[in-house]
Length: 295
Image (cartoon, rainbow, N blue to C red):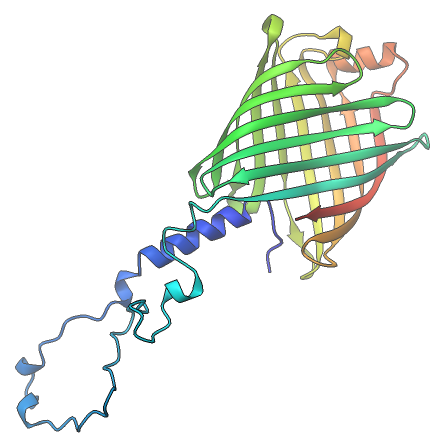
């Protein structure tokens, strides 16, 4: 069974709605003229009397009736072909919520979560990720989007981002796409435009590899690029930073999934020089442990 990801609910709803509203053409019986077949004289055939109240069987491939005559149609299950895309729902999902311990022995709270409310095609989406070190402040971002499904596998997102943590707060307008590439690779790509001509691009890709039905290995890549230097936040132009995390999680239940892993982060270019000038390391390796949960 494929583990639940950020797109599973919408894909299931769209697929089920399509299946209910458009039965397959190959399932419909072809019309046959038995009178033209040799030896097939319906007048001489004895079908036998039908018992009182008996009904002829519906054609193969036809949908169950919901006419209230005792048959259990889709309406009797509370399902209607047009309900799936229009029924609003919501979800809170934390892909990561745990502790990072770096090689210097310092601990940090690490999070990556989202909340959405809406239908299968249009949603309010709020995302946040970052780190908070003990006694060292925090570094992260909060984003809010209108997310619109442009295909069964891709969403277009329009919204805003606010940087939080050390340094001055920055606000950005944002536009991006999020979806599933071939081989079930999940991709997020978001472009940003801020004040004073600032621009940025954030990329994230991850893949779930099922080792067993409950044990799942997830590599994740992230990268950030900026259009100009921002010395007050220690950010240089070009490729600013990148990270690779390798997580192994075990699905105790679908909603509660502990994980362990390791992460590798590196700063590049002017961002690395800003870090060195501030006495910080250009690269960092950390052990991670936490829980993935949703409700």
